[in-house]
Amino acid sequence: MNGGPSGFNNAPVTKAFVIATALFTVFFGIRGGSSKLGLSYQDIFEKFRIWKLIISAFAFSSTTELFSGLYLLYFFRVFERQIGSNKYSVFILFSGFVSLILETILLSLTKDPTANLLTSGPYALVFASFVPFFLDIPVTKRFGVLGVHFSDKSFIYLAGVQLLLSSWKRSILTGICGIIAGSLYRLNIFGIRKAKFPEFMASLFSRFSLPSLSSQSQPPRRTSPNLGRQAVRAYRAPIPSTTEPSEEAIATLVSMGFDQNAARQALVHARNDINAATNILLEAHSH
Image (cartoon, rainbow, N blue to C red; front, side, top):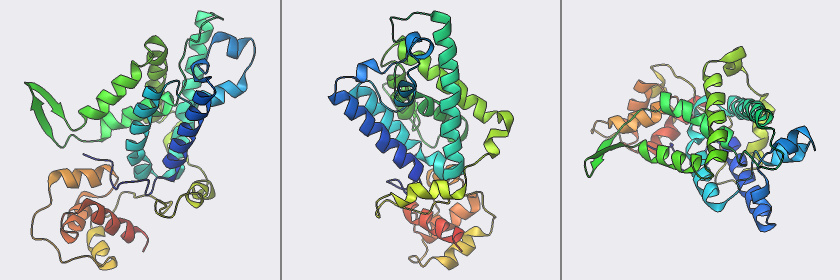
């Protein structure tokens, strides 16, 4: 299992979010204020620190959280490729807004003005993404270590657990709020899964991407069964391989939103190279 093609191809929103998170965390870490970014009752109900609400959604409070968080954000770029940058932007805003409401309710129940009850960082997006990861991404490989059974999804879950426990109660509560937000999005409350940003909004992220990492702003969508043949005609690739594509490679492309038959045909034509097969399918979408 992997997140598809390497880099931020077809994931400009994720790229912008990752860069913003890294910059905010480093900036406040240098100034020695990262540990003070966690939200408290005083911040919201007494001093009305709106700036802290915004910053706390991006900046992690420690280097350990930063590395774990960026790794997960980078992997979850597969969901932007699957549903599109426009809808993924809505997913980010929805998960952040719902998590903020839930966090505000928690703070109102404690009424402790002295403690930073909730840790800072994009926990909302990270843990909201675990909902589609659990439900939509298939297990393609299983293995055992010292009698303990693992799958290719286990490493993502372990990174999530590490991040969830990084600040103990402060991070656990924030992570739970993110999971609830992701579940509400999954349930399509208020028809949120149909909402999307205007086209020009997502294209702004692509314009600021580096040439080597930029990509089409429109990601893959569910395709018709004959897309594989169209892709082969639209993309001049090496001579097709006679080896049957692996189920793992097919599952990877399907998890990105491609039709299973189209994915199989593209892999055959790309000689079982996942990156080349992805390019074939994306090329077909542009025709």
